[in-house]
Image (cartoon, rainbow, N blue to C red; front, side):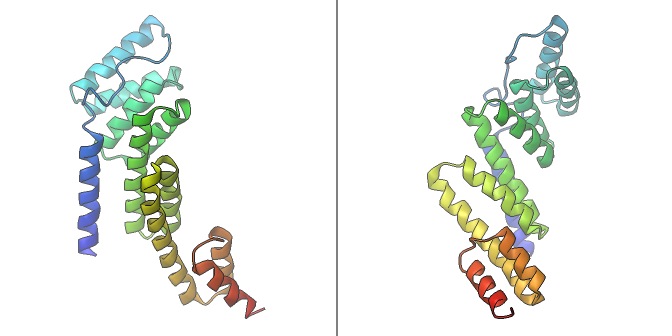
Length: 202
């Protein structure tokens, strides 16, 4: 367990370095993605200045204020995602990167950011034995990842399905077997075994 926790921490640190500091000019959006009022332009500039200086908390406050009037600002969503990530708030980072991705699905860099933070959240969920939720995040990672990386993600998903099915077998419960099949009808090996178990008891 200690080794696993060390691996999780190492994974998060490496992903932080890969994602980049929230103040890295190449990472955040420096220009608004739509026309703005003078007040909103000034608010955007103030939020950006705090972010450039690495002042995370005031930047988060200002970007959230900016989003109250401009909820569809891609730049603000991207920048807030980076700030929350730098502030160790993975859930909020996922939320804002996801909103940004929906606004501009062709944005490659943001797509990579979203995949990375989802991987981190999946690792945390796995550590907490929340396997179903971890699988949901990993399925999204697979869709966001290049084809050459999808196979590794699919193997991670299968490994988690194996863990879930081990718990089902220990329960020896019809309800648990049926619930597993409903969630994972195509789990390699596990789904067929679950169907056979159910058939033998009907």
